[in-house]
Image 1 (cartoon, rainbow, N blue to C red):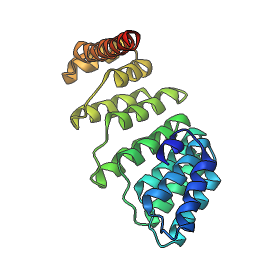
Image 2: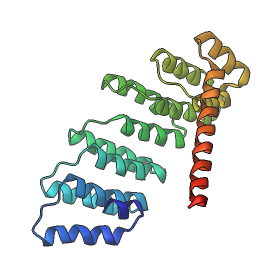
Image 3: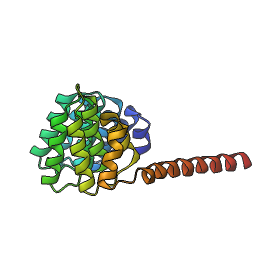
Image 4: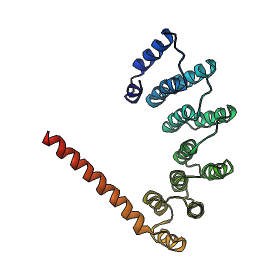
Length: 225
């Protein structure tokens, strides 16, 4: 069933779900989650929400995974209202947001150039004892980059916060920082904060080389069959 969900085959997944109920079996959270996932990924968010309600009606409390799927769907189509409403419902259901939840919200704010809500989100994460990831910080910097005029001071402040929190920085966040404040200022900030730019760049290059080597090895084995 999961494979068909990944392939986006909504009808097969629904048929499979009906077979479970016809056989007298009670679908669990995982089964409902798969149906929600296939609808959310295909963009059928209204159907995904309906299945969330069906899940609740069956006395099965939706978990963070189910909500994250719907949040991601709203974020992809830049539906800020839908994203906010889904998050509020999640909190009302006493479902604890995780890093993916906050990351999706930050991404949604970034897409709509909403700097302050993105910054406030970092504070909310800390208050909830959820450590912000580099992905979340990068989304906040993206919001600063897309704002007009660009929010350079906010970007610098959040980058400092990322370093202070010992976030696992990567080349992507440096690239976004560069876009906001410029190469010269980025380099000065990194030097001031003890961030090794060359090391981060080298890590990206190593990952690329490793992926390339793995691809070539796989292709060689396929040709040798």
